[in-house]
Length: 145
Image (tube, one colour):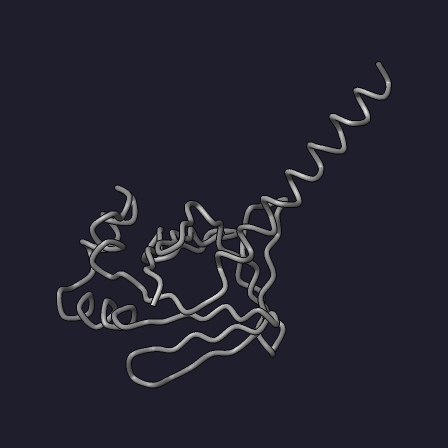
């Protein structure tokens, strides 16, 4: 009986490690932000906040997301590119206990995003926000570039 329990526990640990490794491997590559899906799928609270912003300001804010690309490299480096050419670099890890990507910027800031869904060609990240802060876009939809 003990042997069976040890074998079962070892199998469960191996499956958990394989799941983490699979998510990490699927993340590697360049992902293009899908602004249409991300803005169409705002939750009610985010939609209400967005709808209160003056139209011209909302359009400018939306442009910050259009054309955004993120790259998760196998060596743990991270690159975000905006459509206007600005970039942000850092390092990334996958935290299996949170089911989240953790991005650390050179200045020490850490940004976490829960991996809500991932497949070969699509990714949905949910920013993990602490305190009273909020994100304009509460779910970030990506397609593999």
